Image (cartoon, rainbow, N blue to C red; front, side, top):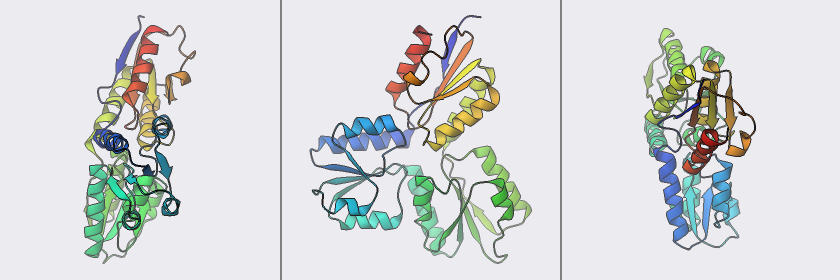
Amino acid sequence: MAKEVVISENAGFCYGAGRGVDLLNKAIDSGTPIYTYGPILHNDKLIESFEKRGVKVINDISELKDRPKGLVVIRCHGVEKSVCDAIEATGNEVYDATCPFVKRIHKIVAQKSAEGEKIVVIGNPKHAEVIGIVGWSSNGATVLETEEQVRNFKPDPDEKICVVAQTTFNRNKFQEFLDIFQKNSYNMTVMNTICDATRIRQAEADELSAKADIMIVIGDEKSSNSRKLFDICKKNCANTYFIQTVDDIKGKLSGMDGLIGITAGASTPRYIIEEVQSYVRNDV
């Protein structure tokens, strides 16, 4: 069987990731000291490239105390409202690179919690995006990630809840969770905040991996959406590889033919995808 290499059309940067990187590049061009609150995206290679250009990653407001005033770029995943307020209070200029789709969730959570609704976030409680979302609620929030947690969730019958989702959460699993809520007749408002880019990327990965002999998923292990792509592809294609750069695949595909599919998470720079594509096409 001859070798065929196919790349998912929407592999790599989504709108929010591309926008955030563009904002950071513009900030660097300003010539002032640049800090990012948290890594701009979950991709170590991308962060390393920015660090070489003088960008400093901070993870706590206290780290700004003894540094020269400059420009603070808020990561694409967003941060809690209290962190936004604290950064502005330092006297540094602020660029908010929060993904617009995440920012929309912040506004929903702030409004609904102010109206007295209980916020339920479907997502990973340890992920930066979810931590930021919870921080925009004025009356706390419950984060649910697993089916067991959803089944054990028992709100007050008289309590109105507002359900939102991490933008990169698996759409099918989210619907399964909603079905459980609906069977329990909860008084709830559902805001489907999974972004279209995630839905499209996951659908493409599902379709491509179902017919691929080998599947390559490019992304950082810390990238939630990249891991979900790997999980989807692995179910369909046993020969699925999760890599960060071309070095991780070298020597592993020698002599292999058939359909080789490639996809990549939303925080994966285009140049890494192109390096992998070139290697697979020409050197394998």
